[in-house]
Amino acid sequence: MKKLLYISVLFAGFMVWSSCEKVIDVKLDTAPNQMVIEGNITDQNEAQLIKISQSVPYTNRNVFPAVKGAKVTVTDDIGHLWTFEEREPGSYTSAPFKGISGRTYSLKVNVSSTEYMASSTMPKRVHLDSLSLKVFTFGGNDVKQLQVHYNDPAAEVNQYRWIMKIDNVQTKRVFVGNDRFTNGNNVAELLYYSKDDDNKELLGGDEVQVEMQCIDKAVYNYWFTLSEQTKNGPGGGVTPGNPPSNINHNALGYFSAHTTEKVSYKVK
Image (cartoon, rainbow, N blue to C red):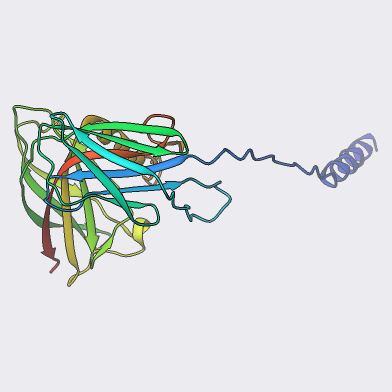
């Protein structure tokens, strides 16, 4: 009888506890908009491009308003100056010029009485030799991956970024690396690509283009941090946060002076 009474009391207590619902009001702080600057100076004789926009709260759609009317200039360490004109809202371009390896380029962006500044030194070019296909078998299925081949120079520290386009559409994955373990070697770098990133496997007949950029250490830190945040799978990825920018006044984005080379490959 005592046992039956004890069970009844426990059951009644459980029913009371389970019927109580506590409404938790999560207050989400909205950070102020920040300046977003994406600047690139390449070793190609072309119009160079600086894009300027503003961040939006993460509850909003990923549509970043263009920043209009900015004053944008770039100088190098031997006194050359280039003025960038706003060709489209938020997009500022220069007259064609070619960046030179070894020179340091400095960016100045004036918006609403605030001057944003950054600098980047263009590394020496490392030649992208070729692309090849590597096939892995998982559960009886062949998975195709692309490799880039290049000879890393032994005389300097090198950092790289690769941009891959499949049928002229850039993949979402961030590819970045350095020569910490490959200094002076002939390198075959695997550009791992999966359906988790773009909902598409690499298939026969795909036209692939890879751009290899030689980047400085600050720009490498930016892309490496971003790549760590976008990794998937068990144990993959880190807590999201803004990657370290080389632009002052807490601006988001980067300013990169880099070499660039592109090679195409048709998957068989």
